[in-house]
Image (cartoon, rainbow, N blue to C red; front, side):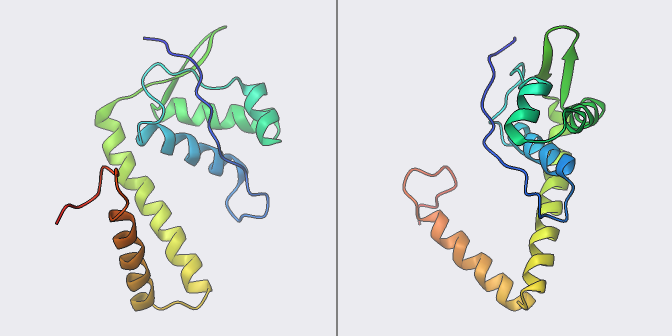
Length: 142
C-alpha cells in the first residue's frame, strides 16, 4: 500500500563530528524503526529533502542508496522512494541504532567530565521522570 509523504522534522548539525549523510540516514532509520514512517510511506524527493536540510542533493542520493541497500526503503523509478518494513531486519537494526546512540551519549558525557556512576544516576532520574508522564505507553502503574 502506498501512503502519502510524512514530514520528518530534524536538522543537520553542521558542527557535528558526524557527517551530514550519516545524521540524515540515522534520522530516517529512527523514523522507520520507531514506526513513525510505515510501510509504503513516500519519502521526500531528493531535491525536496536537500533543500529542506540545505545539503547537496548528492548527499541525499547517497543516503537513499544506502538505505535501499540496507533494506529500509525501495525506489520506484519515476515515482520516488518508499518505506520498506521488513520486521526481520528492523529488530536487529533497532538494537544497532540504540547502541550507536548510547555510545555517542557516553562519549559526549565523558567529554563533559561525567563518570559512569553520574551517567547512570542521570539516566535513572530522566527515565523515572518520563515514566510518570500520564498517557505514555511506557508508563508504569505501580
